[in-house]
Image 1 (tube, rainbow, N blue to C red):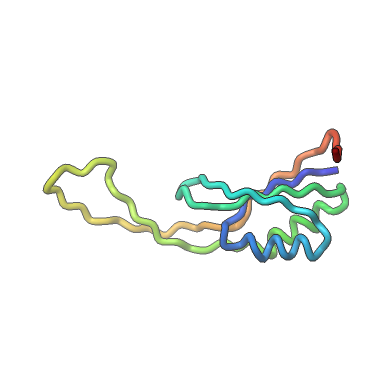
Image 2 (image 1 turned 135 degrees about the vertical axis):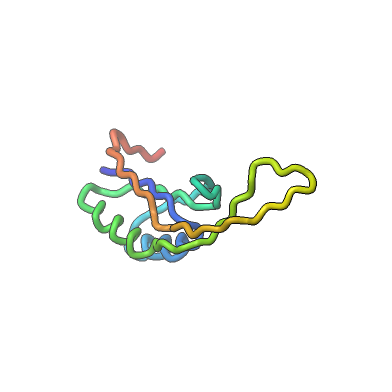
Length: 109
């Protein structure tokens, strides 16, 4: 048995959960935040048999997409009267980070 932990963009979570449930996989979701942009994302927990891992990874890849986002940067401290030109850059966000872990023991109480 395997335990799949995937961290996905909040914009991708609803189609992904629907795809997982439609294909017979149970899933638990948690709102989380972190990474470079400190943006909200969702962490999903899914327990599956070894032979189901590739199917779940395929569903995650099919439903989680990268996108380009423009971000600006400000200096850590600005003095009164200083002017600063906001610099923007494009960064890639989204997609998914997937961890596949071995399950030592599975219990239902």
